[in-house]
Image (cartoon, rainbow over all chains, first blue to last red; front, top):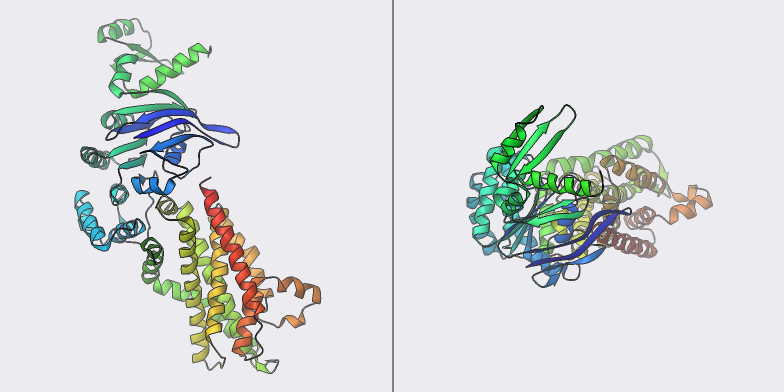
Length: 282
Length: 246
């Protein structure tokens, strides 16, 4: 469905994304993860036609993003990291504008607005000006706006950043509903819990390069299901184990404070970086 | 007209309706002050080329008002959409050719400029100012609006902060306001400066409007120059819009 080959982009001779390859299956939720400056947003912007790659290709449903950008734009919906809503317009007007921009006919537009307002539980707010909405409502509105023109693929850049836990869970619920309807969802996030809960596959990036790609549970299992995190006065060290017994046995020898816990995707990231650091002697 | 093009104008119309009193008041204040201070105050018993001074400056103020309002309506809002509320990207990922988006915004900006011009004309007529307004007069207002709305579009994409937007208008629009024959006849200026001022678009808007308003011979070069400026600035705006995604 989405095939990315050797995708690169640099700004002022500094690589933001370097020779990235990945493939996304139809109907899956795919997470692009990494710390700040990893290249998530640059990758995201190239996928949604907002940025031209320096080299490499992105093929979405047999269309190439730079050559067939208008066809691609009809297939995709996007939720950006920022609250990008027309602050002087009402909820209904924002959706109406989006429908018009995508050439939806009047009846189709109005039926869809009604359906989506109920889907996101925003029907009571339809006459509210966007700037009066809470953060969670704004995100929900951005989400239903992005799917208003029935795109096959939904792109979300940090969809729950800045939201309280309840609003975040509401967004997750909506995303799962969309996945069940067969929509392909690509999201960038730095919330590990979000990626583990939602994503079928994740791609870990650092410094614009691919670290690893795979199914979250498999990546965690391969790293070691248990992590011993040891806190010394200056730093914290991570050690990974395949069994709880091994982790406990190792930690019993520690003089510093430590915790034994289940590993997560953050540990996968730390483990890979540690191996890379060891390999080059850092 | 296609639906996505209509959408851009519709958005502007919704915002215009919602902020009607703000927009109307801000379009009125400075031109009204210029008319009161220069037209009825300083220039009460003054005549230029046999015309009362207030009749002389009203076309100039209309040109200035269409320039300022068209520019601001596009530049300020687009800059906010790009840097603050980030809605600019929503248009970039809509299946809408960029030239249509730019044209929609510029057209809406020009309409806002014409609205400001008509407010000035209404006040002037109510105050007893006798000038002629024809179809060509309205067309020059429209063309002037298109040129400066295009400049506004370009500025909004080039300038990277709201503070710099103010500086841009201080360096570009303010000198034109005072130098392009809004308040005085250019014949009073030294010949070299006259030549420079003749190259600026507002000079041609003021001259064109004034010659119609005061029923003096009309020079079609004024329309030609404004058309050239519009074409040039509109092309620059489109080019800059493409650059944003490069």
